Amino acid sequence: RQVPHGARPKVMRLAGLPRVLIYLTSNVTVMDFMPVREACRLAVLDEAGLLDCEVVDRDDLLAGVVPFTDPYTTKSSECPETWLTPLGEGQAEFFPDCPRAQCPDQGRFENRRLREAVRRGAVEDVEALLSGSAAADPNTWDGAGRTPLHDLCD
Image (cartoon, rainbow, N blue to C red; front, side):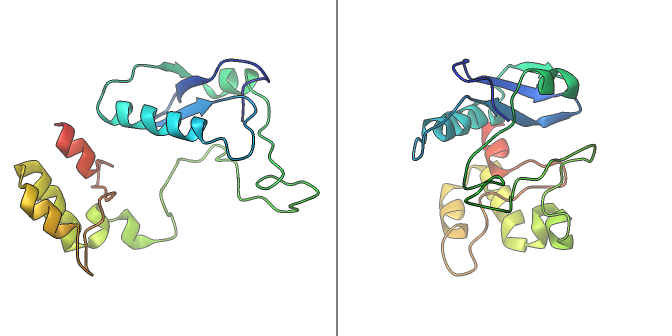
């Protein structure tokens, strides 16, 4: 969803989903990556605990936005199908059909070792674990959803 055309971008959280940021912007032209860059910047600030934003309930959120439209990602004459599906009343899950994704560190020993090396501040170990054919995943998460970036910020 987007804010109405010409409105200033907004960042907020949806009540009940404190780990999910919502970044609303107005119309974006093709190949304009500034909203993506801004969303990434806001995500880093949030992971570091430096972002304070409004928390809204679902009804208030939906009252202040207009449906997202893009001829290549929503149903349109150019694209009869969409990859954007509403969450509805369900909970956000990462890869719900993949049992391994539900395991801490996605069940990979390398990922657990990476998180331990980050916590110890062992830069050489982190570099070694992130290289090679069986490299650890820097975006891995534990049972609480914390990533190595969280550990680094602690």
